[in-house]
Length: 492
Image (cartoon, rainbow, N blue to C red):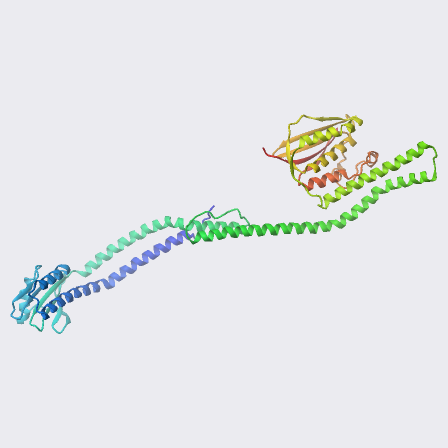
């Protein structure tokens, strides 16, 4: 979107153009008023001089009787509207222009004989000529009369039109035409300037978006001038800034993670040592007690010794299982385990696991319910997703009671796939809902001890789902508990 700037460059461009145009017209009008009349007079004088030079050259070369002389004077008279009469030393007419030269013969004779004439105003006096202004306003003439050394006499006249009236008419016409031209030019430049200013305004809009760290906008206009080069440089600058800010944010994010990770290390280490010490205290005490009993021979019968050995092996197995889970959790929490995003069928994964756990559910007399879903493809780490489902399913088996069934659902909506595992039994106490994801937390310690739980399984679920940035949770029902997790669906 191109923003409308106040004042706009388009308006400024049009006003500057109109101002220059109006100023030029005004300057021309002033020059006309001040100098046009003088220029006109000078032009008339120059015309007379040209005719005088032609006559003088002909007289000096004694060629005024020739056709060449006649032709030259005819050209000058016709071209510049000059009336000419030339007489020799015997007052014989040698040339009379066809445009009224006959009327000048008597006037030339009068000058030669010194007869009184009307009052004239002498403009210039030369060695063998004089230039004068004669006639009345509105019917004035420039007149040159002279007698050359060769005896040739001449007179020539050219009319001086009403120069002031002509200047006024010319200036009025020029003014009206200038105003009309300025208005028409202003309208044209207003529309033409849009093409010129549009790329500049687009660059302004792009730079403003760059100020707000929006680097999506790119220069697209083609002005076919230096603005295109500026636009290309703006595009390169935008890409460079985007990369630099992206790298900076990435580095800042990693630094923040490192700081947070370092701060958590000490707390996690202390918590880990405390929890492990607490969890291992009971099985170690049992192993130590039964081992001492065997050593001291408290019971000599084989059945008792066999029982003692079974207790020691069972406790050792529980300790081994807990250590493995703690190692898995430790890798997840410290980010040492890489998440590999894959496309796979979540329905197939669930069915395969249920089939492998069928012996466990039959031993516990649990019914597993699941609809026959079509394949549902998701993006996730397949191995870790199976571990999440395994923990949910194992937890459901261990806490199943009442009607003793487990129901599994796979639901898709809004680009997400939710997998839920419901088991009948006692709901989780409200005060324990938020804490069940903590390491070593047990809602019913006696029951957990009974099936050998370590309190780490749901912590592993939380770490895995956090590593994939996906949701998970738990919901209580009157007849049981439902655990769920979500994954990103593969779009068709």
